[in-house]
Length: 331
Image (cartoon, rainbow, N blue to C red; front, side, top):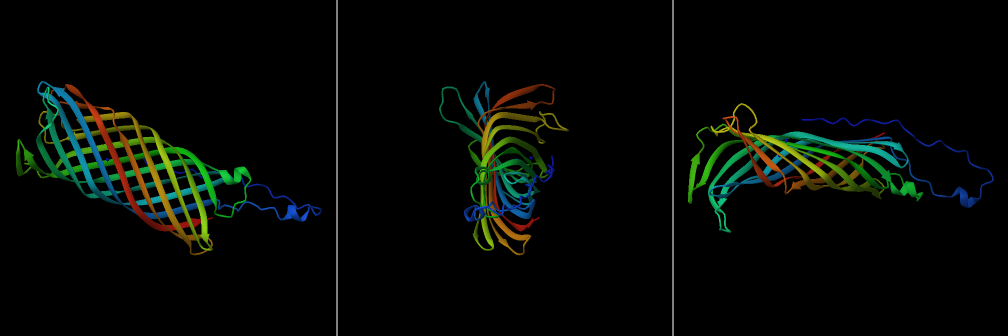
């Protein structure tokens, strides 16, 4: 569901000044644990093999009842280039984030239309069609981290962190449906290809959210470490536009659909394992899952005669999950 690239800014090092040892210090003072030194810059580059899902439902009141239209996108595959970066600004403070971009392919879209007549609790399905889906996706996040271990003065080995973070997330899907086939029409199962087997619809869905979460990393063997993060996505805003290209009654030559919502929620989960190859290079593999949803909003439809109509957006969601594996450099 779809372009703005984010550039992670590298901050200046605020590494602490060293202190000369007091020759009269007690043995206990000399043995006091010291927090492990973190690398100034950490950079991971990896292909991210993902599958995405999405759905979008709107409804409007007509003289025949409540008209509902539901779009469902299933198993949209994509290989994204995922870049994750981090800059250590001070022993307990860091700035970091991630960026991903790639093409979408091999997805399926199901478009179902139903109506609920007055004084009837059941929907009557009168149309269903299926299309192939491809397109592209881009996402990024930027975060400010506070290391709780180092803020509290607790002992921490190099590479060991427990952090709180706040940040911003941007997620965009651009979908193109084509090669449509009508599979159900007025109580009958059919197999009727659309007259034009090219593009029948374009959609772009843009999500923006605040991030609040926790992140950890810890060594589990001399050359092996694990880590993960969990972010709650709040204050979610979603804007989108699209074009149904096979409807003569709708404005053509540009977007004829505009939707927005302001009350969404979501999450971003990431877990990984790293194996040190050298003192500055690691092999990293992980799993990441992003999901966003909103059960509010509205859709504006532009008609060919210059008029517009609004429908209620009852639900919209997008999720992406997949594994990644690549190299991490630490300086």
